[in-house]
Amino acid sequence: MLATSLELATKYNYLEEKFAKSIEWLKNNDATKLENGRYDICEGAFALVQRYTTVPFEAIRFEAHNDYFDIQYLAQGVESFNVCMRSDLQVTEEDPANDMVYLSTPEKYTSVTLQKGQFAIVPPEEAHQPRIAYQGQPVDVVKVVVKVAVK
Image (tube, rainbow, N blue to C red):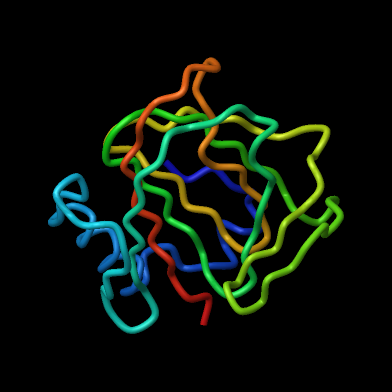
């Protein structure tokens, strides 16, 4: 699944080597059996294995990144994942050392339900809100966030 604008669909090459190697890494590694932490994939791409319990909408801020795409892959569980263009949002906090930009909550956004085996690719121009409890029901999740360098 890739949900984005036509402008961004042609701006980036989603089939370039570091994306292809990232998808291949996800296919060849069972994240439910990996320890939490960082796994290097190739130059310009690494994976972060995470375990958490999903939370209510109000508990998570919208975020974006300047230097990396996110490939947010659900290895176990289910969560709501919200996304919108970041250009209309106000920056509320920045953490450049971790490539994190926190943003105001948008009036309109797209919500996607991520289930086991599904992923969303988020470019730097889009804000996202992960970890949301699907239909308000908290669930334990195993997720891999693959960070793919823009350059």
